[in-house]
Image (cartoon, rainbow, N blue to C red):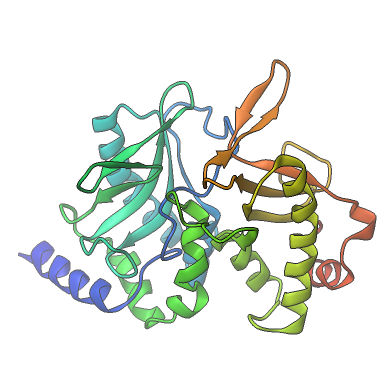
Length: 293
């Protein structure tokens, strides 16, 4: 009875407060190949982690671990049904900010060969990169529920739904020629650097990244792109300074990247730039935050 009461309360809260990491990404935060090489790991996207940050779930805290375990348990059950060996949670449990009103977690699945497992949806049937993992058969974790309630509905303003959907995008989300968008994770990164939305400083940083990516798009015949990671040389297996982005052609078909020996293909491109000439506003914001490019 107590569990039922908790679930009823949870449904009411999640129905009125957006619990999305980023309200949109319907095709997964494009992951670099082989990120999930360990059997059965369940990772969290940058946007999902930023969502936990915004909810006040501090990194390394028991509360954050409990919330992650709640999501991992539900996703692990669905992985078993699909024969998946690894997964990435893109959106935390939610029912607001999605075309699907059922309480669900949005996640991507990969098989034992680290190949993405597609989902099927709609009528007539379509395929996508993300799965909706329904969560209404489990009581909502009380710690997660508490922090969502405490947030009071400010998450929408932290993660606008229009561009965030592009982080994990289904086909045709980037129909506008030559559009260069930013993923929810990239926007959350700018937020964390103190680059306020709509500010001249943020505009300069976005234009700096767009100019870098624009030149590479021309070389690849791409007509649209999404920037997943801002310029960096740390936190990547590639220590050259680069912007990480996905490219699409005029038919909105993803343009694959080729890398490694023997050659492999992936969804993301490393767009190299001169670190010494990083935009001064971006560099200053990174240094002020106590980080390195």
